[in-house]
Length: 90
Image (cartoon, rainbow, N blue to C red; front, top):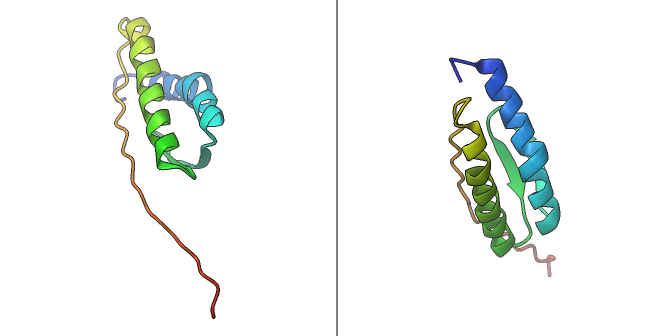
């Protein structure tokens, strides 16, 4: 990032539009928040969340071959699971 901040930001934006957004749409993920170089995404299914993580990482590996000339972008993906069950008061 420090060597080419504007180029890195442009590549991150390009990744989101070309790779992340389509996979989120495919699995029903909801982009909750962007944090510059991070994102918080919500899913109704843990299986869908893992499917997106795997497909997005695979797309990034394919894209990184093109970026070797410009420098690569390392992405870390974490999946957290929470179960929330709401029951009406008796």
